[in-house]
Amino acid sequence: MINVSELTFYYRDQQEKPTLDNVSFHVKPGEWLSIVGHNGSGKSTTARLIDGLLVPSSGSIIIDGEQLTEENVWSIRHKIGMVFQNPDNQFVGATVEDDVAFGLENQGVSYKEMYERVQEALDLVGMSDFKSREPARLSGGQKQRVAIAGAIALRPKIIIFDEATSMLDPEGRQELLKTMQMVRDKYQITIVSITHDLDEISMSDMVLVLKQGRVAMTGSPVELFSQGDSLANLGLDRPFTSKLQLALKESGMDLPDTYYTEKELEDYLWELLSQM
Image (cartoon, rainbow, N blue to C red; front, side):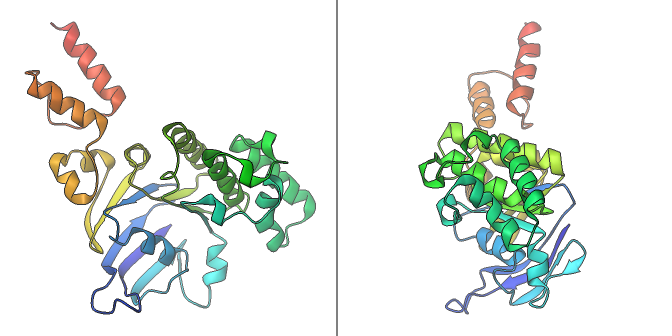
């Protein structure tokens, strides 16, 4: 669905060192890719290049089999939805319903189809009861769910979440992650997630780690979380289960170095305790 090859990008005021330096990766249809790394590593720049908001200095971006160019950028953008860090920057409608319908109106979708798409999108993200509310009066998590509804109503093949969970409290973050998973499962949408959130990373299929504009690592979340103390060098904390495993090992319990999810670690510990 996305094929990025030897991508390099310079901002005009930073010509001495590229923000992205020869970056290559691909994302399969329906796959969830998390892009992680320190602030300034090039994560958000990568997202904006994929969406055609920036033009690469060199290299190529192929979206759904078509190379992104200045001539076809608008048609390709129809295949991509964006959900940003601050949803207030995306709202244009006086009500939730109006806001979700805005993109469809711009595309000339008929009223009947527009109404059906808006209701379906709001139902999916659990915001139908709020359709007459002003977006400004919603909580952070509710605003992000409305932003997702606006994206999926357009029927994109890809949704890019650019630090979409970073401004939310833990409860709002968990609700949003569940919504992202539901959207992906229902529509088989390809997800690209720019994030520092470990829960968000753990839900993805693959992880791309950027460091100073270059690819430092690609692999599964399990492969990433197995890096242990090296995670700090990649701008990430140890996951909770990894910290717990380390504490248990230091207390004398014999545990493997393998990374476990919370459920896997729970099952392993129960089995270990049952043998004592």
